[in-house]
Length: 138
Picture 1 (cartoon, rainbow, N blue to C red):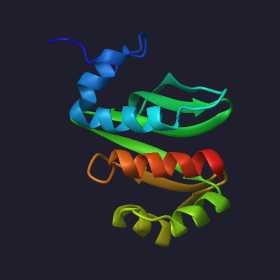
Picture 2 (spheres, rainbow, N blue to C red; picture 1 turned 120 degrees about the horizontal axis):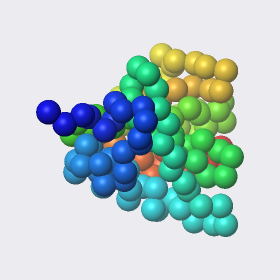
Picture 3 (cartoon, rainbow, N blue to C red; picture 1 turned 180 degrees about the vertical axis):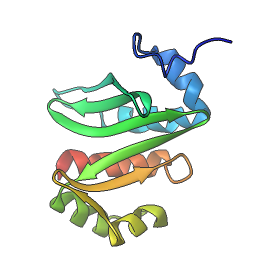
Picture 4 (cartoon, one colour; picture 1 turned 90 degrees about the vertical axis):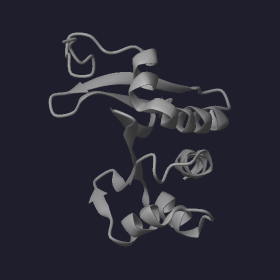
């Protein structure tokens, strides 16, 4: 049996393995990132390893962390942390799914801000693009 590349701390998986792990839902993430990847500072991805979750990807623009992407077989967990200004913009935005609104109503707060989790069920390209634009501007 082949070793799961997402659990091997010695070698990060390649980008093809990321797309294969997540499946069709990865096109949503890629399309939203491409829609927001404008300007001088480009959006970059970096692999990180956690003993509890294996390999995951961080998405940054310059020094600003946009999200964490935890690949699951056929799915993903995408985590974003919003500032107070970002949470206010989310509350005023159109098209935010009920799963995100519910998280804002009973937020998980951290020193960096308020956590919003998305899976492929709630993450369309339009929703993720809106969230990324808010993250980039707020």
